[in-house]
Image (cartoon, rainbow over all chains, first blue to last red; front, side):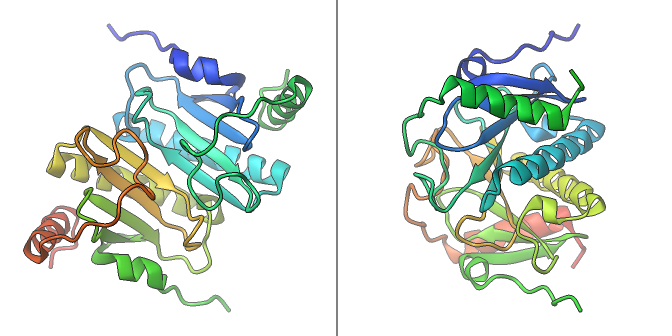
Length: 139
Length: 139
């Protein structure tokens, strides 16, 4: 019997849930340093992209594309960073981060550079609502 | 008229070419700290994954899967890191890195942590030959 999927506690702590796409749960990082989204395929025990079957890998790429285009469109960022690392949180998750040449870590990758910066709660909620409106499902 | 694709000079300097897959050139980093491969889609002016059309995005995911499975199989690594960053080299390229809990950067991402370590030339050539034999085309 397969284990039911549930979100890793560390991801739950660091993010708010935006919406459920066909394969993945979409999360928004609470770190206001960067507009930072995370896709988490709802596949119990998946650690690597290659733990997904080929159909789910294709779905993941479709979702990476949709989320990347939406994030770029909303933020007008200079660069997107897309990464599946998982050295600290083993549950498969894909970071999609909008980078600006003026951000605190540029041009370095974001991990470990600056302490997380709190969002104004209203700003975080508005950002999440905008994403949900663009990426559905209709609420 | 579209511009012809050519490999970015920084990527050419830091790697050796392993083989050409249907979409991407496969490179092997000369940094012996980590078994580190890079896929570079041969699409002039592509900077982001979402600059590829949907068919090429799907091909990229297929190639990420093939290369990831081969690299994991050859190295017996503890974790794969897959990332399209491009903050310093704008040409679209996808890192596929075999991580070990004993490597110099673990559990941090590899970028900027340790100076590149030279390979013994024979080891580098043998690694490249092994990858080429596994990922084709037949030479």
